[in-house]
Length: 398
Image (cartoon, rainbow, N blue to C red; front, side, top):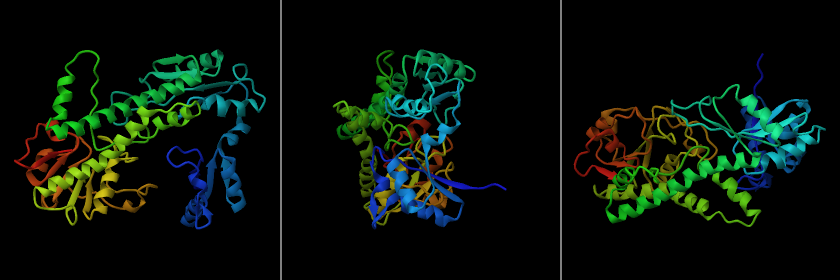
């Protein structure tokens, strides 16, 4: 008979809300409220998994089940094993957190135990790349660790890229994500400026892309989403503060990208004003809940923030996304749980006062959209890319 357990990960040094698990709510730590809610679900046994002793102490005092994650692995370690950390993290995690704990069991790193860091790389929804053909960056704690880990990875991936240390590999992963975040922040800011000047930023990018060197195109949108790009850069921001470094580019890009949902809502108001309507009491449909095209992943999706702001202003909010037929419970947007995607129907779509394209799924029928809808706000330049011509005074860019 299968047994089901609920495992709740928790840590104190979260970047956005540090110490959140131990914040008091009605004189009780937040993590204990979460634990209680999980118990009441009666799904199965509940465990808190954490690397932090303070959380361990609070949960144990409460009488709950708790696992100290790194320490839980230690009894199962044996000589000649390889451990490779793949989660995105700040530079120094492998050496500062994993290595001392492994060595505390009597192992000698690089002699009878091998430790490495090799960040996960993936591009959801892109059929061209998989874990097999994406080059695998890898750094070992010692040269011997690097050789052993490289031999392991070469069994399953086409190309291993060894680097000098675990810190280099950790930093490389952050650079990849920071590069995207900063450049998307830049082009989002340029879009706002271009809009004020009456210039089409999409045509600007297309023109600049004809330069065969020194330019890589990034595109504006309604905000950043996914579980990597909006979050990972701030691991470095947090670590850099230990060295007295203020990562201004990272923080500024974060501010700009986080402001884009508000910019979309402002443009929604302007579009509705052309019909002598306000957001209050208007019905608004958002096309695409997933954070990027052709996937069913809604983590950190900017569409949620647009929905929240529209609802606060009194709009009747719906969404359409064939990849996400219903919104499942999420910590940040629990109040949207259970909402179902509308059906793609002419009578229904024509009812909406405004339709906002948030995600450019290939399955969307944009010709039907312009045939049926009154006002369309396009945050992805989707109609132009699809070669669909809107009706007069129908299309608004954001």
